[in-house]
Length: 446
Image 1 (spheres, rainbow, N blue to C red):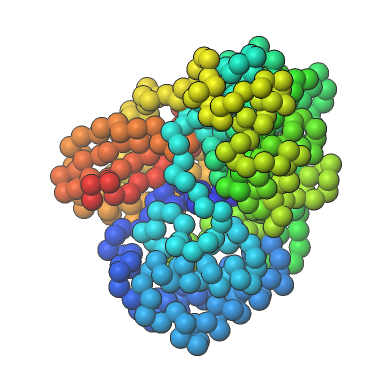
Image 2: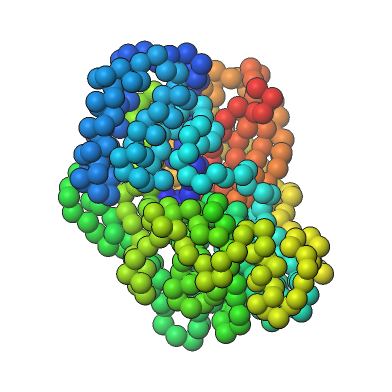
């Protein structure tokens, strides 16, 4: 789990939005210079010693990569291979599936087994792929991730309102790679008695940076527009269910809100933060662990163990049978009688005007920080000089064209400049008045 707040493999989003200009990033096909390689290792070692949730394991991991550098194990490697080699070395020591080094131009996980293999996320709106009515008035919803609450909450409200009159519910968590603790807590809140005080859902034991001390933060349930309390709920899992996806299944099981059906999940429970370590490399540093108030444990390293064990392919059919529906089909497309929710395919009306305004402000070097969320505003201040330099060099904006609703509800646009093009993604607050996050990179044609 990432607490930017983010809990998923590869979910750097806001923190990697404003990357250095291409000229400042090492080529992924050429070996790194000795000085750059040494600086990356030194910075990573410092982050591990001062921020990793286990001080002892952080020291051991730092010593490992320092020894590998000194022994020449990283010499002659290109950026992607170097990141993959460091990741493998760190995971051998920590056995932490969230521990990962990302290369500057690497859009996904390094080519090593850093976590359960993830397929590209399906089209979704705020993490919701679809909702359907199945035979017997059984509700079905697939959740592929738990993005920032501003993207997740509106979609969750629409989906759960559409499902509220069903007799039972199947939540498909099989392709869920994670997301934010706040979004996990929000979905859990639909299954809690709304007449009672907020329920403690999770505690997070977090390391204080630079110290061998820990603080505890708590996550409580919140009010939701509708309630699904008191009806049978089944959560489908697979070996690819990871991080926040596991957190949701674990809590549903621990609190008795639902029954888990499927495969043992991936086993990644730690919260992580992104640490820039030089030359465009980023280290994902696990700094905290969740503690469920019912079990006093988490799922790190062991995964969520289903009450009903079956293959991921047979999980939907098994859940339907538990709900009294003896169906032969395993596929939701075959079983669906009515589609209740489909992700939007058009941008929010506020997004393009906000993007044009934000780009003009970045180019001028004078962003209006009142239109940015506090955290995103801080990030923009830090990286403004680099971004302004890059955008100015690209010349005047020629056009802004909507492309798609991207991963977990971000609106994606291709922006053409006089001297090139960039793919920009924007995430707005729930009321559409502030930018929660943005990121850019080359268009797919480049």
